[in-house]
Image 1: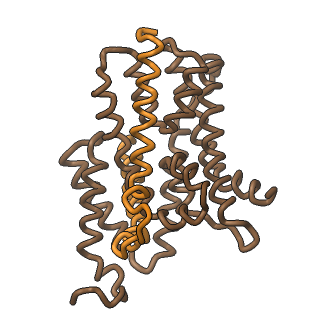
Image 2: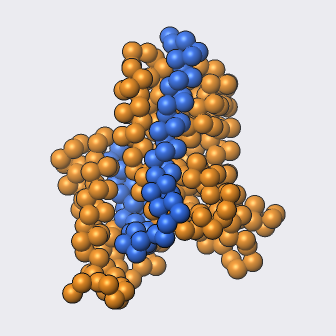
Length: 233
Length: 62
């Protein structure tokens, strides 16, 4: 178990780095609208979604109906619907722990799940569970810390937020190097760019993913030509 | 705090439930059933596609 824990810490370390500015800043923002560390901790624990939590700060500033809260939450996190698709059977095989893994299926944990590289001697279930647990702990602790002492920290955080983008780029490259066919990435890029132009930066993800999934389905025989015999000619 | 504790708790609850439901949707849809081959295929190719989309999402802010 100690070995698995070490793996989990190592594998999730880049997430920790990227969470430092984002988590601390979130704590500060909550404090600014009058919510102390208990509220901040509760949001981080129960919602467990960085971008939505940032949006919630504006909700807490008042003037938003509960219906609007629900709609915006559903829209903002709609990409999460796609994450589970890759892990249905895997999580099911972990028994009761699948509930924890589903609950903790953030962008960051999704990227960690996609890039696991533990050896034969590590138990798969615990590798997944502990790796998913670490970012949760980092996030909760850092956001609470931000709430308590955030404004005292003087360092310039310019550029640190690139850590997450950099991590995603590295994981993407690893995916592409290990794949037979790069079409999924190409399709996703084209779809993203088109939707960025059509819908703007804040709204492009959902249409982009829908189009990407549609294209992946239509072009299945190009991407996986040796698929099962049910494939039509 | 502009809002009451009750209002705040409701907001947190709504956000938590919406997020969890979306994360759970694939598992709910195929609950107790064998996962169809087309979904398994998507499960294989989506990680690369989603990572590419996420990279675009984060890069757009730069």
